[in-house]
Length: 386
Image 1 (cartoon, rainbow, N blue to C red):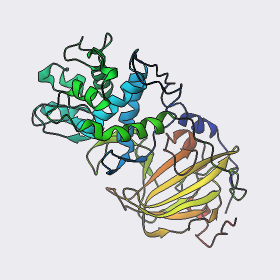
Image 2 (image 1 turned 90 degrees about the vertical axis):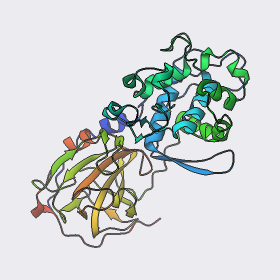
Image 3 (image 1 turned 90 degrees about the horizontal axis):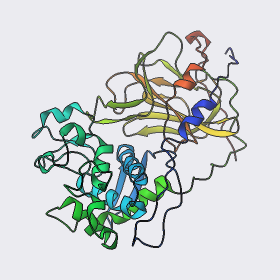
């Protein structure tokens, strides 16, 4: 196969992943517990997070839920008097009321479906993460369909949008001396006041995961090849971009969520190419992505991953641990998993396979396109050894 020695400015992609949200400085409210979270960041939102409620129920939080949690954390960090304890109260309330999902309510407000949302609810005229009611004075439909507005309304206080009516957390005298579940109830005024405390351990897990010390860089194996060539993941002339990175209405699930890669439509069976030299971290079936391959690469001394989703059944030509070369055929386009037609879902994940995808446009713009005639047929690959 012809080797195209074009290596673009891929480090720009690595920079995107770090600093998604601003630095958070969580100050202590009067009377709060003696411990506090030191200055930290939300460098990225995980794809998923496991936690356990106070009553021992295991829960799995997805990236959509964790993105809303990051919004709540960021808003709370910027309001004097909220601090770590106030952020935990807000996370507990959001978990209880909506499981940290943005709800429309088309029964009460049909136009709520016009705004980005994750699900459609029917609890009176409640909307959003905190299930706030326009009829109770929390805000207009347009305002309440904004997660950041809902977070500001929940925290309330002098800078809140409702001037203390309805009361946000900071409008409740002595809230910091209350049990966190009781503080959440004081804002939400629920008919089921005992539910909030159940979610305190989950809120702690979220806050720690999103704002704790940066995770150490994964060890770099000597068997992970360095990237020197970048290749577009589909042959030239075979593909059409149908969806880009960012928020969108999922065409299968019909919910608004972050699309963590790009979709490249191509005929079933079109060769899928390794975008640069690497090692196979995963090759198999995953819910949503269908048949998927994830490669890990070494880019300027840092680990990065590329992901290739929705491959056809029988269209995976590598196995976990295999070493691959840039431009090598590793699979075939298909339409498995949550897919409406044959296409490749392609992601770039700075930090490795377990990290979240960032906008891959910087990577793709630097990648050389090769023709189908330049693609070697799939064959056996050397397997990485310890």
